[in-house]
Length: 182
Length: 182
DNA sequence: ACCGTCCTTGACCGTTCGGTCAAGAGATGC
DNA sequence: GCATCTCTTGACCGAACGGTCAAGGACGGT
Image (cartoon, rainbow over the protein chains, first blue to last red):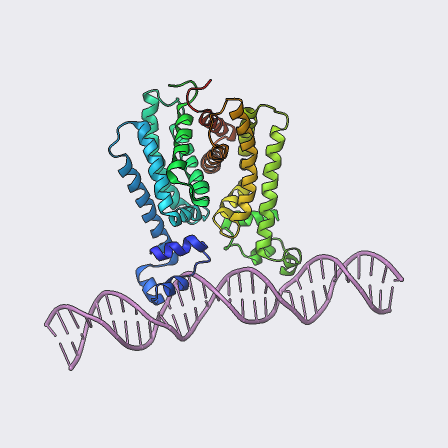
């Protein structure tokens, strides 16, 4: 499955053939259709596992932190780290986003992640450290910054994830905090 | 070409066949290959025109504004408006981003847009209204917020572009301004 | 030894794809 | 009337695709 994921990331969903996957694994085609009912199911499975893994990483990063602002920060940093270590899976996310077939699956996972952030944002609003605005919009904004910076700087330009994360964190925390503040 | 763009946006690049495009246009296949040398060239052409159009819109929006902060704001608002009016082209951008073949083409256009923003960011830094950080990172962050919010709220949830733009603008301007300030 | 189950093979099928091309329609100049 | 050039047609091609299946190996129970 790792092999298949790498192939999909490299060439895209449609151009990667089942024949190519099985021959790269030195197995027959039958074994593929024994374990998966279709190419689509394989892809969906890979996607699901990747999302699970990312979420696990985020949860681990924030489990010992009570402060909502710090939790958001740690969430950004851990995501950046994961995306860097799993570039091919990140590519898969982008791929899935642009395929009508998979975008609902992807969106479900994304909504879960955003809901996590939104919880902390709400806490931040209650305690007056984040300005009073729709928590969901703010959370998606954070997601947008993280993804874009990861893609452009970590992924395409090979910059250090922690430095890029620094920039993302300061941009987001200020963006969340709003005018005046502190 | 508009028809082809709509088809690509609807079904993706690979699943949209040349046969489908020409039959939808009620012409023969030959006429397609008379004007375009391949399906790939057609797609590239559509992409190029879309990027040009978006940029034109941004330029028009800011041409009568001198203040860099306002220019950034107007850039975000005009982009949001354009993306809303040209949803299928926005989908095409996402699609192109995930195809190895087209992502360089897409990136070139994106870099141009980012360079525009970065110019204003630099001015903002010089005049002390934006904190001293890498203008390019900040610009990409703005791009990330705009795209993510457009996709999620305007595109998927049909919210009003101007309201979403409000949120994007305030998030970005605060994110750019940095701590303390004003 | 024999059977039944689980797993594996790769030739094969129907379909669809991007792209080609011989044939010809229409307009224009002479 | 005829040659010429531009544009258009759709049948056709080889290649590649996702998926099927008859056949058989591996192995445990009896």
